[in-house]
Length: 175
Image 1 (cartoon, rainbow, N blue to C red):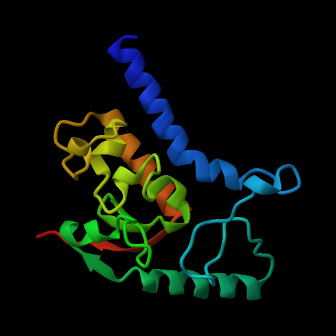
Image 2: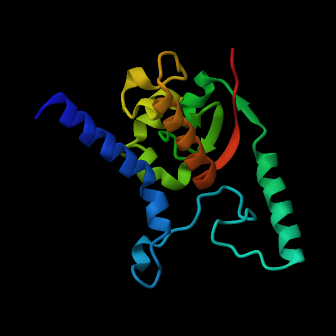
């Protein structure tokens, strides 16, 4: 196999593994109860993507729930502090950083926890790795120099994915 083929296969597996929780939550529960999932959140009062908002009272409740989730997003940590949230300590949540935001990906611990296909992302800054679709120690940073327009678009799409799928708990503090 050529380098290009291996890179294409790697990129495909990366995309599939990151999107897998999103795909699983869309499988109808009656079709396959084992794979039916819920939106990952650390705040039980948060509004899930499947919740229906049908009345003015529901809209008010949804707005207050979103405000509660936003108030959780007050954490501000450095890249060094982020490293302790890598899943190696089961008493701590699993965090990763995308585009300066810290996300709690504990609900996806099969993927991001120890032994998971994306455990390398846990406790790390993932901007460049997501933008260039490469999993590697040298890509786990926020250096966006030299990226082309397509790669920047890819990072934007990954940011939107994490915004929808996981709870934002804070911001990465720059030193």
